[in-house]
Length: 189
Image 1 (cartoon, rainbow, N blue to C red):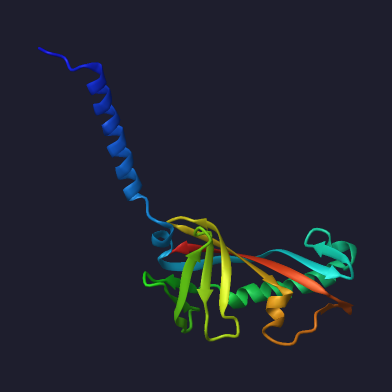
Image 2 (cartoon, rainbow, N blue to C red; image 1 turned 45 degrees about the vertical axis):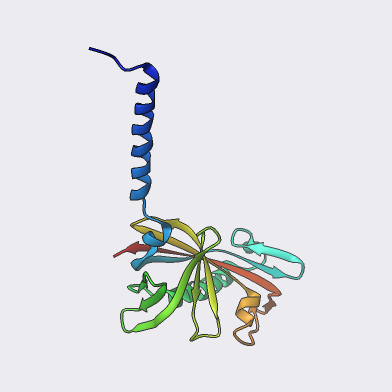
């Protein structure tokens, strides 16, 4: 019996590994494929914020130096309510394959037919909402798998003021600038 030369055996083994690794890549869904489907909100949180009073910037960790616990609690309740308004409990969001968007808050379907797109190396989710004064909402995609989705929304005072005239005060202290950061966690249905 004749044995094959070592270089031929080596090439055959390499080709087996190459073909094996190619087939594994084909089984991995793209980020768009993972996102497509219906997602139920699990949790919405105000994860961070910063406010400017005069020339000093305060965040969630050091705001206690200027406001009382009651003032901070009142402020954070208002801000947390805003997160609940965006994605109420028991609501679902459907990302369709044709990049249209459906939203169901448990009572009625809203935003049917609005659009979405992944951008910035698929690390951001851009949602186009024509029915509001906000034309685009951009979320950072913190986590995306076949089962879990975590989105972060950062909102600046400039973006809020574009919706109308607002006076920003906490217990008589005028806020010159602020940034809010919300995290929304979903599970796939």
